[in-house]
Length: 157
Image (cartoon, rainbow, N blue to C red):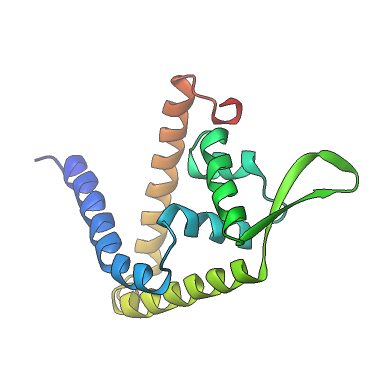
């Protein structure tokens, strides 16, 4: 097996292990929420004036799919929509108090996971980290270009 294939398979295996290990703790602490909903809550909590278009672009989803997720979160009382006085056309989202609670639980779980994995990251040099980050950035830009070649425009879906 060539090294490129080993790398891709290694990244996939690493991701799957992370999801597996984190799943039980997340599901227990965040009962009643799908992973996609929690990550939507996280995005809304961390970004100014998020709307359906921004969410769809970030998660590589269609606007209609993201709109459905937002409606579910509104129905659960986790987010609320609002409009700016100078722009009555655009609808934005913010966390409710209940949403902030979910956001904070999720952030605490991330801190626990980071602490669990700290030993691995302490062994990595700055140069190794920079090299890995450079690879991820380059590969991500390549995949963005490939998505663009397909003519898929998430903004217009």
